[in-house]
Amino acid sequence: MKITKICCIGAGYVGGPTMSVIASQCPDIQVTVVDLNKERIDLWNHTDLDKLPIYEPGLKELVDKTRGKNLFFSTDVDTAIDEAEVVFISVNTPTKTYGKGKGQAADLKNIELCARNIAKVSKTNKIVVEKSTLPVRTASAIKSILDNTGNGVDFEILSNPEFLAEGTAIDDLLNADRVLIGGAETAGGQAAKDALSSIYENWIPKDRILQTNVWSSELSKLVANAFLAQRVSSINSISALCEKTDANVAEVSRAIGYDSRIGAKFLNSSVGFGGSCFQKDILNLVYIAQSYGLQEVADYWEQVIIMNDYQKRRFAENIVTTLYNTVSGKKIVFYGWAFKKDTNDTRESAAIFIADALLDEKAELIIYDPKVPESKIYADLDYLGTRSPEENRRLLKVVNDPIKASEQAHAIAILTEWDEFKTYDWNAIYDKMLKPAFVFDGRRLLEKDTMEKIGFEYYKIGQS
Image (cartoon, rainbow, N blue to C red; front, side, top):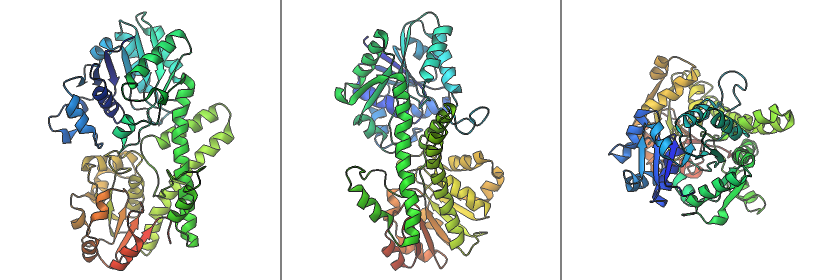
């Protein structure tokens, strides 16, 4: 099958960047990204590329190069599905907040709605590609819906999970370690896998495109994120021990990273991991293991989440303890709200939960992040439901000037590793703050000796 038109349902953090790269590398394929959220689509079509709904280095250049040529953003979902040979499903699959599996299982409501809509409007055979992170055997559920509610057309279901790291998503797509394509082990399934592979072969070497059965592909995505998160939680557990024993977690990380069996990646201690995937995928893995009666497996992976929550809680408690066991009425400045640098994504950001803990202690918080808008910061706190929106706005203020924010502040907490924080005039910041002036570095961004020489009481995770 020659692919000439692609539709992607979902214009979020996966769909937008992925389709932008495909459009840039496959100029002979028309790529249409659709979403029911008109405001989001309007931003994707905005003449000012700085207003794209997603910040990702290199993204606006790709959109500028392809939009209106072979990349289109639209709310006309039905037409895009009907015309495409390949339909990617790239919608949100959050953790369930209700019913069976609450707090662990993936909520597949959006996936089912997509499947039913594809079945309703399709008049020609299609390849349907799972791009969202999904539990094992979701493909069979999608296949059942399509076959039983469609117009008699033939659907092949493929699993093509994304392995993107926000902040480096464009480079991850252009220079992927691997592309994973799972499908049925039938003649039709093989033809579909080869057709999808031919798209990626425009820029990815064929030996890096792995074909599996669909269930292996679905599970591989969950397991990849679980293993990465496990490394973060592992080194964070050691950071707590380092602080008690005068060891330095950076030196420990470097020492063990030289072991070729271990490697150096994902051994940077921090205030905790965030983002849309790690916690959600591990909870999903825990739920799947429990559903098959594998309680020991479930307990093992759940500990990764427990350790991550502990690291965030430990950081917040240390701020309160260090500030003489009370932060009531004290001004604490947060540098960073996004879950990591080079993205405006705040999902599961450590900053949200540390802010919530300090607001419970009646602290007055000042927040600065170079890419996260004020509306998003308040929405993140309101979503927790810990206090009223009015109280959140009374106790927390969002500012655009990080240096001015430090005036009369008791402490600064660094919660995102934005590079610009390393370039600040910390002498000037020190002069503006109340004394003693505290800095709590949750990203190990600054040098302890330098900060203490300026005069700061400086706390760095994993170092006494």
